[in-house]
Image 1 (cartoon, rainbow, N blue to C red):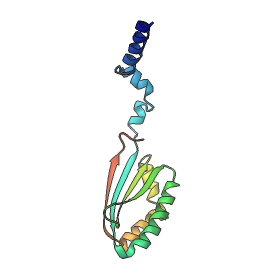
Image 2: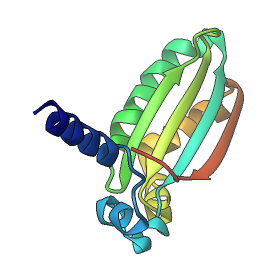
Image 3: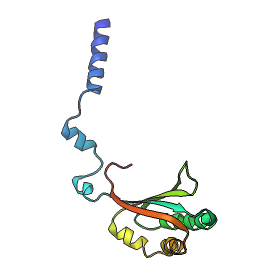
Image 4: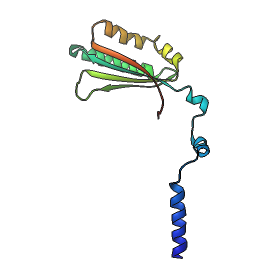
Length: 136
């Protein structure tokens, strides 16, 4: 009985750690090859806000984030504050495609960010566009 039990344990353990074949991997992959070519578009913004404009900024960016999240094609819109510099922020935006970004740029809450920058509310603002690759 012990030999049978050990053989069963070995078989289960071996199969659990065996490499996955390509065909098995493709069966478990939730994205088709077509979907791999239509990955989301991400925008990462790093902005340093003038300290005397923080209240205005926080009011504006909250409205921007809430409005953006309600847009069709907006997958996420996060506003992050740097741990080591309280007036530095990062926006992490994810859109389904370029059309969703184009739509976003027509919205009043997007225009409010531009108005805030034009009014001198930022010390710096840098935006980077990226393609999603391994995302959850």
